[in-house]
Image (cartoon, rainbow, N blue to C red; front, side):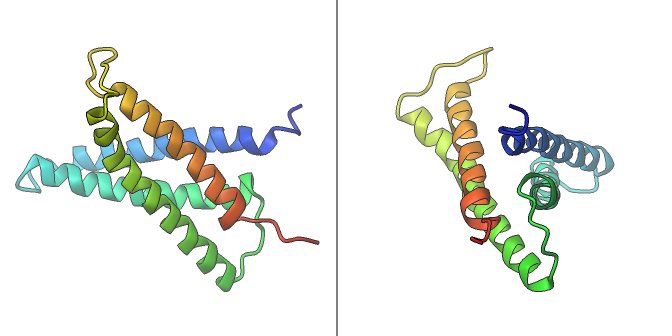
Amino acid sequence: MLKKYRELILYIVFGAATTAVNWAVYSLLMKLMPGAVPAVSAQMLISNAAAWVTAVLFAFIVNKYFVFESRDFSVKVILKEGFSFFAARGVTGLFEVFLPEILYKAGLDMPLFGIEGFWAKAVVSVLIIVLNYVFSKLIIFKKKQK
């Protein structure tokens, strides 16, 4: 059973690790930059952008090597897969930024734990996880037919 679901299990494990990388970089930069940037919102923007880039780079490496076992490290393949990976994550990143508000305004506006828009954010998070997996498996790290 472990062998059957290995790829999916590793995807989930490394997805959690990617989230940890994102939060660690964001938190570290927020701690290191107080006062260095005139406004807190600018500090958050810079920290979040750097955290996102770092997390996507980490996700690319672990997904390429461990999850989807793409072991071709030629420059051509790395550039092709890397560009596709960042582009796909950019698309799903746009969903993450804009779709919760759209769903919230469409009626998915029930709070949970006192957090407005919790369910809209949760639905979008699940959608993004699924889309990132599908993009990675079927497009970015697609196994070559033998």
